[in-house]
Length: 142
Image (cartoon, rainbow, N blue to C red):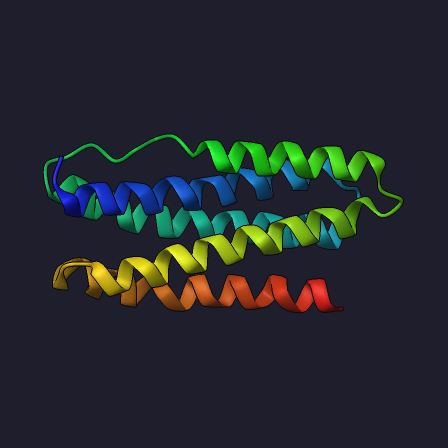
């Protein structure tokens, strides 16, 4: 597997963690506004994954279909905290915002070390990543 594919697959796995976490949080909470937001955020993650997967496939490699262990642990941790919390929604929001921090940091790190063609793709997708990050940061602050 090439470095380029490895780097893209790592980003795909981290973003997939976020997508799955939003889908899970959607199913765990009852507030319809938050459910709609979480559905939108999961869809945004899906779009970024698709864009990165196309690049991996163009390199004649297989895009990863899994997430990461860190992502699974974060989701389990959020579930445990939500169970013990008096404000389940706030717990999920805080944990999702931390997941957005992880995604943004991974994107920024990849931009620094990526080859020019991958950097160009990441630059196209970065506004979506930043918008999701900002949305969750604002929601957490509210």
